[in-house]
Length: 491
Figure 1 (tube, rainbow, N blue to C red):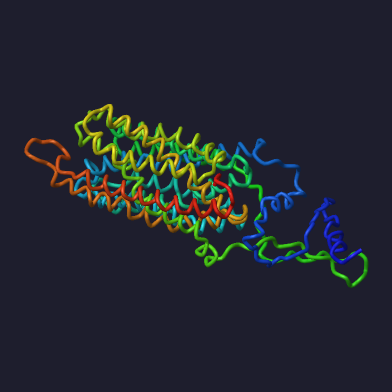
Figure 2: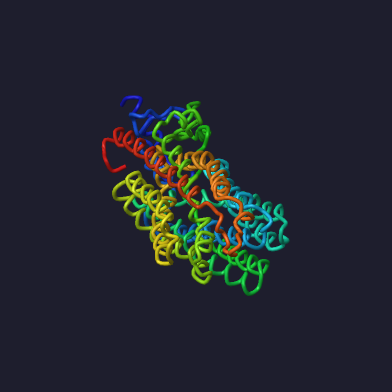
């Protein structure tokens, strides 16, 4: 028997738990994966779980329980972000009326910035196995910040900015990516579909929270309304913490120590492999399709949130009755429920690149359609609904798209975290840029008393659409390179 076979047999010895761990390849703890090998690290993850009870991908009580828990996290957090259009409108017209739309826009944009920029750190903690402590602390801090927002005084910009922008944004950053990434521990074939269900929670939150805020602010005032949504979010996050489960153990960075010999000989048993190494920043930056995809996401995020944050204000300034204008954000998020589930199923069937390219083009066209939507109620409702579908699909497809560019489950956290960190700067700049292009509300009151008549909507709408078309082109290039490397059009 040759040495290789002998090592393979030795590597199949029973461990202390009485289970047998089979390794069919020699140990190479620090070997760098080459692009030609294209090793299936997910199979290695299944081998690592060989000492656990039998498990199958894409099914099981804990798999769907985790989907439900992650859905609750997205409902309570990103759902509140989707409802920021209500806050933007209320701040501009009443609560922070002495400040410009651009200044107020920084509150929402800084929250988006931290939502994505914290992803790099959250991804590393997630990959290191610190999922539960991170989620508990972030959930508690998020609820605390919104309760503090309810204590902010009228016209006190810094109080609102600290609580809603910085505090809630940092907490959101440590909740968003782990809640999405944990789905990769349970789903493989239908990963994009499961992630779409999870992200649809943000759409459902975007339906419920705007209605709650508009009604409660009108009847009971801003503090009571904010405390009500904070309590709702806290309850959902508590439920999420008891229903989510991780499955893939963290990757060791060094080989495990060899077990003590029981034969009395000086020969040491072979050490268990440490698994494939994490990619370095240099390796990530040199991955051309990955970087092109990040560049596309960057320019798209600059433009995609304009209708989400400004649709209610757009409707009111175009003489739409407040009774209907208050529901434009709800209609938009209602459409995104559908958009965040079905297109992800198409992404599983035809590839996430193919699905997100169609959604990007749809968003660009619908943003331009806003220029003609101010002429009537039906047009605004239709644009809001369709934009919700396409923008919701785009946002939900970003995560499975980045995951599809990873070489295995061990890379998903850091690849998504790195991408979200870069994209966070687009989230930081996008809304204030559009607010500055829109103009100053103080100069929009004319003699006829019509509110918002001086706001220049064609400027932010045109620039946002241009960003979306640019992202569309970058995605086409990234998809072509990826399809060529994989030898298939389903990418």
